[in-house]
Length: 135
Ligand code: TYD
Image (cartoon, rainbow, N blue to C red; front, top):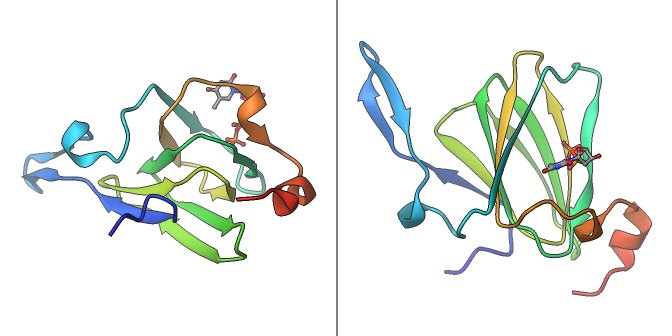
């Protein structure tokens, strides 16, 4: 089933064992798109909510490589979900045209694997405009 238009968790390989530590890897074989950008966010105060936007064309995968992130997602059909990211080998796929918010524990480091380079024109930052957008 093609689920690349709905938010969903992706489990990446976890190579290793507790006595030695682990390696997780994202590569062509286990990614739903070819990445063009990776960025990371950190030191977000716990009372700050980030996100609050959608993208016209960008797909993203968010990974809590450290700490815990609560992500809410909303699609244009009204489908809303909340995801807790707290495993470094699990990512959340967020498709284009999906409103999202994120809250972080202070130690959270969020890595984002993105399908395109940064383009402010790809953002919808007004919730009412998002709701009025056509699929
Ligand atoms: P934004 O994507 O709104 O962050 P978040 O979704 O975490 O709330 O970006 C915040 C600011 O950082 C905004 O002014 C644009 C800038 N930015 C870049 O310059 N390049 C990037 O790759 C990203 C993701 C953001």
